[in-house]
Length: 194
Image (cartoon, rainbow, N blue to C red; front, side, top):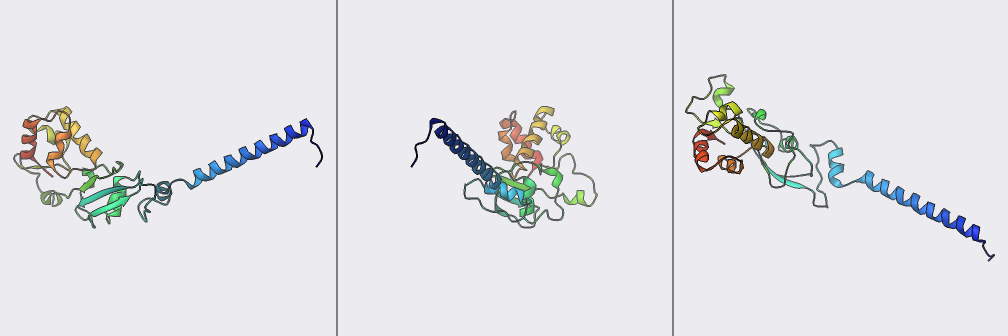
């Protein structure tokens, strides 16, 4: 084998380093394209045919209320409340979708409750009287302010909390809202229904 000059060794070394860098870049780009199973599921169109990823990035949610197939579903990480509703067969007739934040991201263990319209509201009848309970899933800030001990800030906090959670299944969940103490909880229990 002939002896290599110093300049030939430098050139061959530079070529080897360049090839390694190009190979590493190609591998990195290939890994970014394939992505995680959750990203692949999101790119496939969202609500249909969710795949379970092997990296544990999925979330499990309980979908109940006014949906066609209530149940517990495994969803890809990053899915939204609207995806969970679609996975549960879509909203049932009489669902009040305005009562929940369909754009909220799902969290593991979350319960998504799709509220149903009140029978008199669906028939175009009068709203519940002053003493009748207000639906927690659809209560507005103005309706919440009518409850003793609830001001505009607390009413806004309640609506924001409900939307962040994707709906609430119990009035007792409101004890997590800032500004709600035991006396206020009693007022809420008397005036709200899930």
